[in-house]
Image 1 (tube, rainbow, N blue to C red):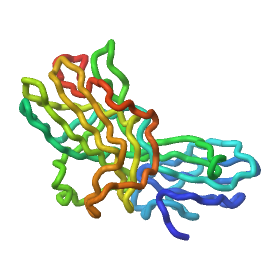
Image 2: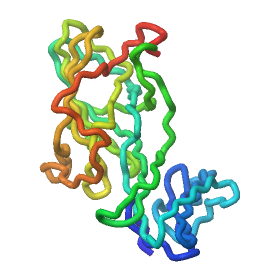
Image 3: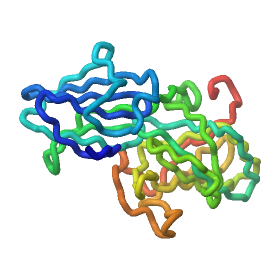
Image 4: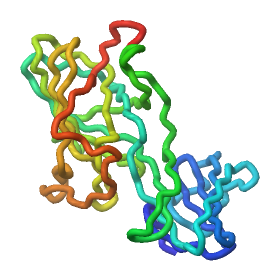
Length: 272
């Protein structure tokens, strides 16, 4: 059986089908009109490679797994597709950056994807559930009155144009490209950046995933930032064209330009 990470599969009655991810093993079983989904945490990653669908799994523990039952009728087909998290992500650069007034920077980093489980095909396709491929911690961005609950992510912030220096690409992560301009009169010394991934779509080129590009204009530490999301995929590193295969639309379609508080400067305990 071909081992494909993101794919459609038919479930044979009473025959378990497994899916191996980086932190979890999923078990699918069809019993009559119900689809059973068992989720078991991986204890030893060496037991589950390669990732993807398989009929055999030494890492799945049915007794400790968390089970869900979905009434799907006679439908036998399931599909796992990648998507982005359901909350904004606060990116904490491993190595900080300072951007002088009047300057611009181009960066990229990777965010963990989620998986969406569907049943059916075409117009009859129905979303059953979503879950993170990798666990993200929760964090608060902004002050106590106007802030919001987000996910926190420590990430390497790379410079666009130096992609060849990134040796390892994770199949469960999507690349985000950030174009940042400092129009203020102060140095932009950022330690946390809030990305509203609910406005981002997912694009695929071969085995790599990308989001649309994000453009941010920083106007000062006491000002909100102007944020714009590209309506297309990013430029391809390989073919020098655009990444055109759109896999997943944004959860919330963005306006042409939105205003968001995007940076945190750790000025007070309410921003930590």
